[in-house]
Length: 273
Image (cartoon, rainbow, N blue to C red; front, side):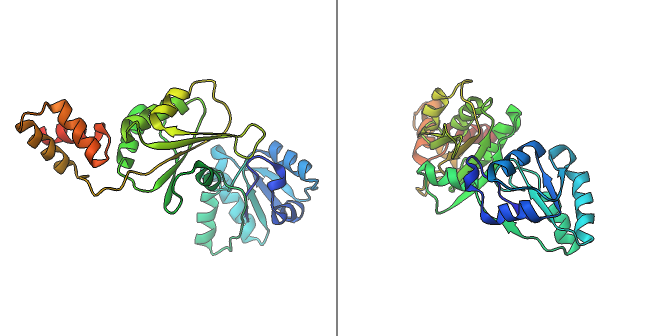
């Protein structure tokens, strides 16, 4: 079983999670201390064996837990908050269990992804979850450039320490006018949702921002404009030939086609290479 843990308030725990905590034979917890605190807050007495299951030991522990499952024992996987397997341990065990033909059940519940998406005020009909943006600047820039034309609303997790840097990188890749929302400490006492453009949010963020962060970014605007790099470069070249300075031409093409200036700049460089 994979059980969704509260992302803030203990009372958000489902009745099924409470029952599993009290009755399952083995609980694999990302943080055993937080698990015991949650159980205490819920007034639940844990009857099974508790084992640690976190990023550094996930591969080895998944093999051990699969063996327990194959021997007919029930295992509950629970992380610090939200759903196991979503940027948290759990995925490896699910893959192994599926391959071994072991039944899997999910105890649904709180999710920072969908909570942030709904409260952001951005479109919810189509969205994608992108996890954490890469830490290294070059990898982060490449990943965000790949997402610049994504039409769906995007949801990211981010560390408060890297929030300002990531927002600036997103403003560079997606454009400063792209709508977004920073959702902090969702469902907790100091919950805060700050909405604005990426440019505004990058100016707002600083190293004083604390807590769990979920970032929601609007998708690329519809408009039927150019998106292929060769077409963008050709449009810039056409305007240059008509007497428009290159920098101005790139800015106009980016704005008119709803793509970041960086994408147009890279397209022009690639065309000349």
